Amino acid sequence: MELHHGRYPGLDACRGIAILMMVSYHFFVDLDFIGIPGPDPFSSPLKCFGVLTTISFIGIAGISAHLKSEKTHGFMKQIRAFLKRGGELLLIGVGISLITWWVMQGVGYVVFGILHLIGTALILTPFLYRLGHYGLLLAAGLIMIAVFGLPAGPLWLAWIGICPVDFYSVDYTPVIPWLSVFIFGLSTGRFFFPSGYPRYFLNTPEKPVRCLAFLGRHSLVIYLIHQPVLFLLILTILKIGG
View (cartoon, rainbow, N blue to C red):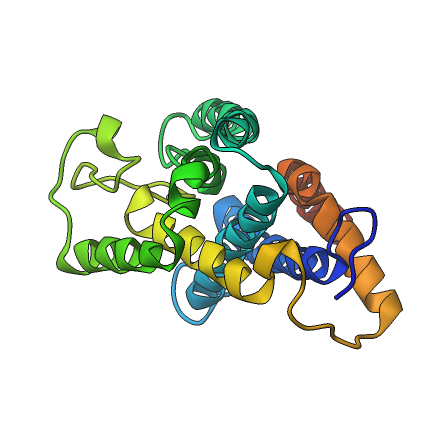
């Protein structure tokens, strides 16, 4: 897994696989939203596939945050760098919330989705990074809280994991328990990339890795445009078939 111009092709390729998983899963979600018969994306095994996709994205974000932390020396520099990137993702997340609220007429829209979670996690990274492997205790604590269950509460606490009883969202990734996955990613990065350098070099077919790495490097753009593209594709197929 060599470095190219500061990038990690193997890690980008893993992110590329995650983006393909996401597009595949959302294809079935869109079929369900439009009302076309197909596999239920909200029950097993597709639901498990969707959860695995979310875990992959957040975990890879944690690994990438470790690498950026290693390259950014100084606590204040890290705070500025991660506040900028995390803030950008949060703003994009807010935009997605507004758009989905309008499209879905206020029912099931994205309140605190994966971009909100990753943006929040990045802002917290300078602090989480300094916990070292002790951060795993925090991650375990968040999971335990989620297992025992959080009380119902007002919608404005949904970012934590506290929400109304009848709450529903098409993309809900609250801090409890999903921040734990990001923390696991940080520790995974610390193991596989000590001091920012790969511990292992894998001999993988170069062309497939390059293709997947290209998708991984542009994962945010793909994330933002894939839903309109999928809707257009499905509606075009329906029109041709009808």
